[in-house]
Length: 384
Image (cartoon, rainbow, N blue to C red; front, side, top):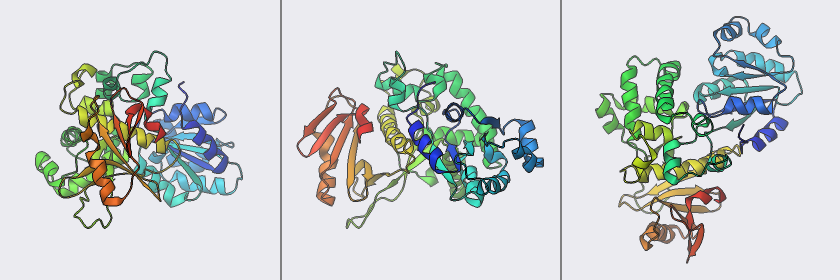
């Protein structure tokens, strides 16, 4: 097993809360991490028809099997089980009695909020981050390799064929998870929608345009985007806006939680195809934003990432809100630095008075101070 950076946070949650909820995409390593850390607990998958039927028909009898608690995987499939878990943990002083795992964030959060609020510590586990991948022997990947392969353990650690694995992943996701979240009659139309989203990485969401391309209305597009978010396929980066005395864009940008999946949906069949690919810049931006997000999630912290854009086209790729300060970051897929890399940071500085700006690029310089700003290779993103 590859050591997960989030394990330290998991230990802290287990010492603090009676219930630990481990969420994230399918196949991101949640079950492996839970079973490794909580080796003394029984593991039950509620995707197993027999276990699911037992929990549905006799929840008290089902939970009585686990006097010392258990790992309950895909527990959102039996939502009324949460009320019975609440009664058990309220009468027991032990910490981390139950570990709840699921890949459907919306249904899991909904069930927890209704029955277990205040008793649960959350950890969102995404696919491998850069540091976890590079800890694997012989993982000397280029940037294009990172973009193409993504971070799913089956591909990185078990070296599964990306095309075969992602093909099965998409099919399973469409046929199982989407049906669970919403009874969509035309699954082929939803699948087309998923592919269209891959072509909009790093772009502001245009609901009308997306709807026109699949023959759906604004509400349907909004609903389907929510499904993709709840099942950890995409995430949205919200715009940062204050009273800057300008018209500020207030539409979120779309990104995928895994660039490997995005490459598959874009029809990219090998890492070498990315060298001159039109989407390389957008995928690079997606990769670095994911690394920033993983740094937060691995510490059980919410995202503090935004972007800035005004009506005249001035834009900063990432704004990190640190409370008292804002950190501006520009993302450049090129490997040769130029003065134009810093143009938007200077604009941000004039607008806000904030001076701590960084350019992350694909060049060979780890860190270089460029006057008021810093130029860094994207691989040191964990230090931000």
